[in-house]
Length: 332
Image (cartoon, rainbow, N blue to C red; front, side):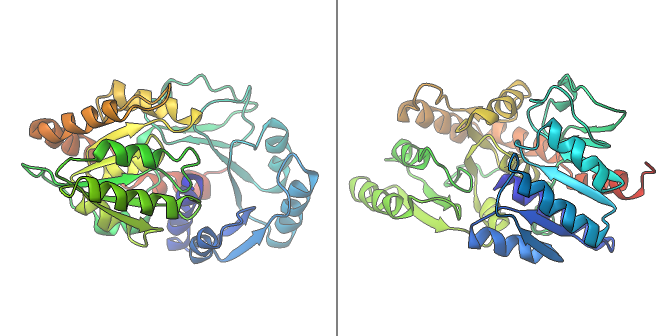
């Protein structure tokens, strides 16, 4: 889901500058496709994805028809072979990466928007421009419109936002709810469009509120207005994903979890820079450790205010325009 949302941010900025944006995707979710269609001039659905040869064949056909000025690849399955083949389909290729997992990258522009990206040992198959770090964070226009600049922390926090990605396949949401049980907070839990456990989570929320009436839990399914939820929140509990950059931009202090292996690097860099509080879940998250992390964040006003101020300075919302300047106006 994060890959889709950051590509939408880039498409928004490109269309502002008069570019036509075409999405080629294997996305099967109607809710996610609606978001893509809003941001795109054309959307093409793939029957199969690389390494199936029909992926590249479909992309080649689309490029022959539209003659694009640039191709943007965002997905961990786009390996060296795919990048080498795509180079011949457009004047410029931009690869969006998070983990530096390939032996070499074959592109004209390599983007990694994450904290600490500049320290990764990227190896390039040919000369390329490296766009590394949060100054290139991809923030969608809905956040830019809604941001409260110079936000201040509430003395006594009451509102907790829980957002664990578009799917949460490990169903960590249930563990987070258990950790919040009994706290005098109003919690809004956002379920992404790919989350299959919505009914189970709703039932659990009802059960917990019967056991601990001081804890209020709302379930928000596929929220149409995430910026409003972030402005409402005093604290967010989130997976260490690209949502972190949106929360930093909006000025929401975070308690982070690693719910997937590709999130460790982001989480480690957030902790190293003291940008968040971490709840350990490596060997099965304990409600106690998460509860303690939330309590630490709630009880330290000065720390929350410092996080708001520092994080809003790091993510300024102009990253997508810096990227486009390299993609659209750079001579090959």
